Structure formats: structure tokens, C-alpha cells
Length: 265
Image (tube, rainbow, N blue to C red):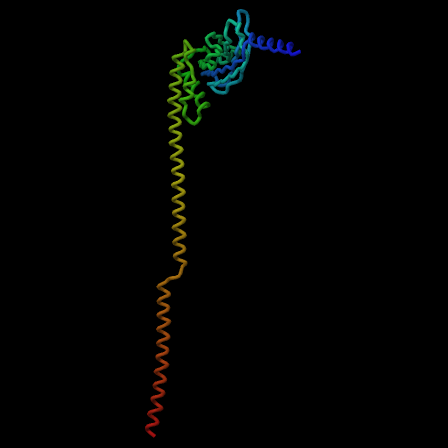
């Protein structure tokens, strides 16, 4: 029984190795349709052969703007016996003449490679032409997603434009333009944020100072007057002294009248 189980395990391992290993691939694609804002797009990763295409993965949707940013993650098993690499087939309905048929681009240089599993592609539609502007639009959206707060240097190092033999120069120039644009926008945004925060703090401090001065003035007006208290004490004391002196004078006058009268008798 144990020998039978060992044979089954060896068979499964050999069978899996013969069929290849599972690989992950990623495509970041930008499609620019200058003539329409409402159009359809489709991207398929297919296994190519001499007779037919077999799709590993397909994504499609409807664009609501001129530029459509697409990210496609695919995982599947590569057959080591296959002669051709899986390729990306891109389709669109971006014609302005009312033609509703799919236009597709089959480019064998846009393929899934396990040594460089992430590919970047940008096209101007409907002719599938490419230039630096198309790649700049692509990388601006890519950098916004990957590093929204800035610090995109590490992300830039992951971009490999060397696989794109014909469009490699456009890819590199578009990446650098996008990096400069994102960096400038981030610095400007941070500066604006600091100015707004500083202005808000200044307004709060001014309001606090105004409130403090108002309460200080109100308290000083409602409190006792030390000089008034002193004057009142003097007046009251002076009045008492004057009253006492008057009473004593009256007593003296009365006493003097009685003594004089006594002597006359």
C-alpha cells in the first residue's frame, strides 16, 4: 500500500512538471480615442498557435472618456512545450464613422514573459499608433494609482521599457514626463495644503486674542474702584469729625452760660 502511494505521488509530481508551472502576468494598457468619449474596448491574453487562438483571460468594458486606463492581472499555467508565448490581443470600437465592428491588434511583440511579467502598452486609436504622449497619459494614471502621495522613484524602477523594441523610446520619454508632472503636482498640492493650514491656525489665534481682550475689558469695568473707596472713607470720616466737633461746641457754650450766671448772683 505504501509503495502504491509513493508511485502515485511521483506520478503527480512528474505530471505537474510536464504541464508547466503556474505564472502570474500583468499588463498595464492605455488606449486613447480622440474622436469619441463613449466607446468599447477589449483585451485578451491568448495562446497562439499556427491554427487558432485560445484565450487564457479576457477583459472588456465601455469607456466614458477619451482615455481608458486598463490593468489586467492573469494567472495560468504555461506549457513548456509551447513554441509561442501567450500574447495580448487588443480590440476597440473607436471609429467615428459609425462602424460597429471590432478592430483588433495582434502584435507578437506584446507577449507574456515570465522573466519580465509586467508589460506597459499605450496606443492612439483607431489606427493603433503610439507616441510619447500616449505613454505619458498611461504613466500619469499608473503613478497616481501606485504612489498617490508622492515618492514614485521606487515605482519607476519597476517599469521595464526594454521589451518594447519599437516603442521603447516612447515608453521611456513618457515615463520621465509623467514623473516630472506628478512630482510638480504633488509639491504644489503640499504647498497649498500648508498655506491653508497656516491661514486657518492664524484665524483661530486672532479670534482667541479678540475674545480674551473682550473679557478682560468687561471684567475691569464691572469690578470695584479703589480710588472711590478711599474718597468715600475720607468723606465719611470727615463728616463724623465735623459732627463731633459741633456737639462739643454746643456743650461748651451751654456750660459757659451757666457758670457766668452763677457768678452774677
